[in-house]
Image 1 (cartoon, rainbow, N blue to C red):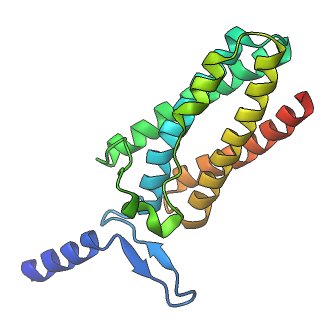
Image 2 (image 1 turned 90 degrees about the vertical axis):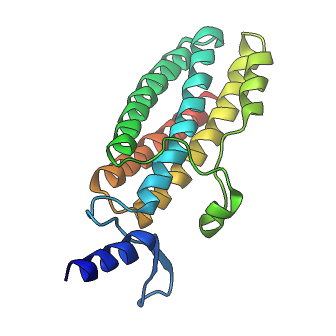
Length: 187
């Protein structure tokens, strides 16, 4: 009996992706303890660097934006995303999962490839002098950045399993969508 249970656990643990009969789509299976699935882990691992890049962009805007409303928004974004990063890292640590995503492109083929951050975005902002030109560039780059966050969070809402991670994804979709509208109003 003990060997049978062990064999079942190995099969379940080794199967990170299942096949659903209703849609034929691939679906992440929860781990043996049932608290999270592969999509939850991937979402958090990809959202951490995405958020970290967003906080760095916001930090630059706090110092270089010429308009107070942009500096204020940048500070709010930075504080929110720093808090979210701390929470996401706590979850990954609790689940005994690495913070960094798998950098092998094949590991991300099933969900449209690696949604990554582009270091060139930060370089563009760092090379832009303070003032109105920085404001415009920051607003445009952050708009695209926040669209990426919404896409990533929608993937978690659709295929994630962990209630807390799905709730975070819902908050990200709502807040980043509102930020995108606010950024557009500043352009």
